[in-house]
Length: 265
Image 1 (tube, rainbow, N blue to C red):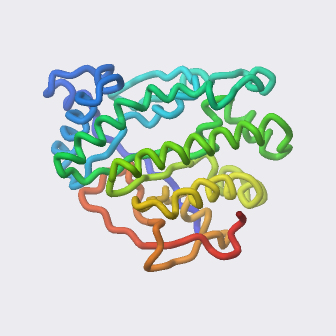
Image 2: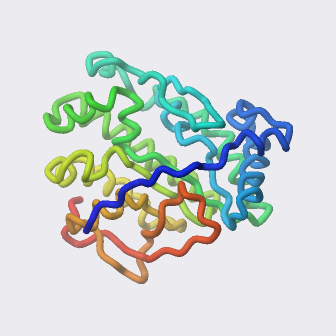
Image 3: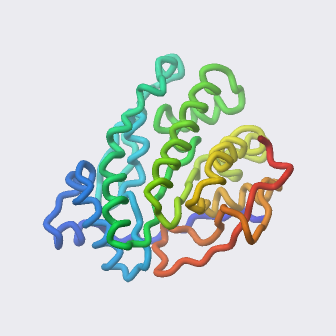
């Protein structure tokens, strides 16, 4: 299967929505009420059926200690990773994660759910999150060697992602959108995808497969998994495959699938 390639599109700026609502971007990052209002404003302005959260794709990266350039017009980005090398990162523990930054998101999801909104929540996958701890090239080099502390840090990040999904599931969104573009097959290569980044994504999926909320996979990850036989179509599956949600479709349609029997544990 051909690996999905992300297409650059002019995503609608948040600035006009925030201006109309009299909100600052900073308010949406620290207040659930402001985040809920802004997310609904984006949905209405773009004629969408689903309300997409969070507004920032870097929220989970910030939890790991990365310095973020917050930019509501052109999109947030990691300005500086939490650590410069693996020796520095050795000190990182689960307790180091700033989970309090996610509280406004949980509050906003709960508020919108009470109003009957159809909510899709984006979640960043493990390899992309590791690139908030350390530069991406360092992560890729460590994937090939798989020496400490890489396995331990990957495990911490996977646990963080899985726990975040479980907490979101308890709030009852319609879909959880799991995105790990930096771990896709076309970026890491077939060998490292089969041995490292693919199994990492699968471990998160296995922990989420029994939850009530279907997991909607990023097309880049989904096509990577299908291409190596880790996924199979299944009408009763709790994993969903469809278009890239970053493109803000007005209505979503997706197919169902599940982990293949030969997928690594």
